[in-house]
Image 1 (spheres, rainbow, N blue to C red):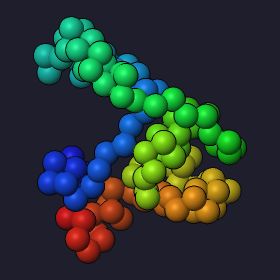
Image 2 (cartoon, rainbow, N blue to C red):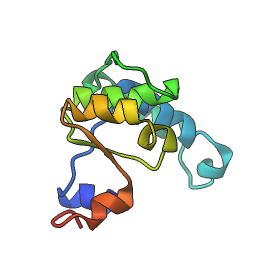
Image 3 (tube, one colour):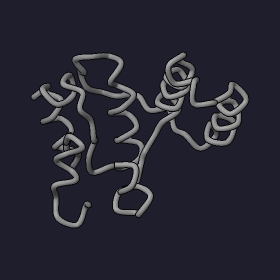
Length: 118
């Protein structure tokens, strides 16, 4: 997926909430062993923060933590959410709500299997 974004085949969309979540993941000890410092995280968030939207989601989401993903897709006018998260993928009500807004929920494998996306 990262290579597809780097090539410009896909455009990544994020929100402030997702950036904070990413910062939390990058602070985990098993990730910190790669040399990511607190200063690195502060720099990234300082640069990205003002550019990232806060979006309220007017839909029921099975896992409330996934609302930030849905919000980022809405704010970024995305046509898909790429996730292996079963709470997103298996929530038929949410899938219908998103489909009405032109947004699909796909796994990385489904995206990469589409013509022109690899």
